[in-house]
Image (tube, rainbow, N blue to C red):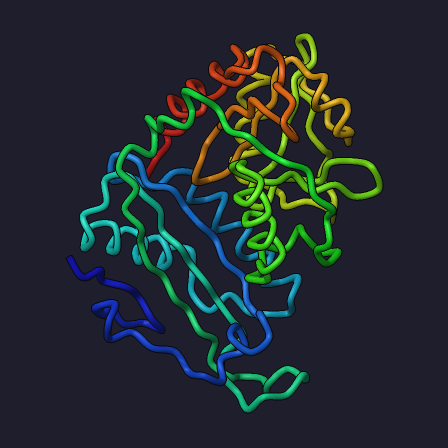
Length: 285
């Protein structure tokens, strides 16, 4: 089946969709993106993604070229047209196309908006969540504004390949002795009855799933401590897990070849995954 995609106001077959070779997203990674999960044909945490999108654009001095209401309609139309029951909707907005120059193009240059879907059957009932994932540690060599969800993803992609070469599933990045986050997710450990995850700053992405999971954890009377933690702490933890829009809550069972806790998904990560899926489906749109 050929997917229907959205490019600059038009719905097109994916093989007919094009953007300019002068687009600044291609030339300078001058753009931002969001990924929204779909369960049961409905969007999870859409409002949070829309708010973060506007913030990312503002931080890069870009306009929001489409209203949140219009954006929601585009998401829904792509989900409908591509018959997505479980999957993802990817959105990218760039500063647009202009002759190559480090300086921003003239005010009024049309921005580029692209959306497409990815079908992911079994997203909610992922076998990976039953066995957990393995991570390695790598040095965090990204730029300083990780709170902006830009399309500058080369180093995270390199990190995933480092993990693959080591026989692992992902990498946790370390800076000044402390874990920042995973290559495409927020990182957590559990010690005793306390969930520990790095505090919000420019050093990490302000995850939409992160915010929801921590809110649900506190509502369930779980203890949460937002601070940096070391790899030694992580290896000595009782549990570990990650969160993201595409994995929800995913247990981590091994770090740098060492088992975390019992080397199997722990009860707190399992419970948080259950709560997140249950509560998010109630508010899906």
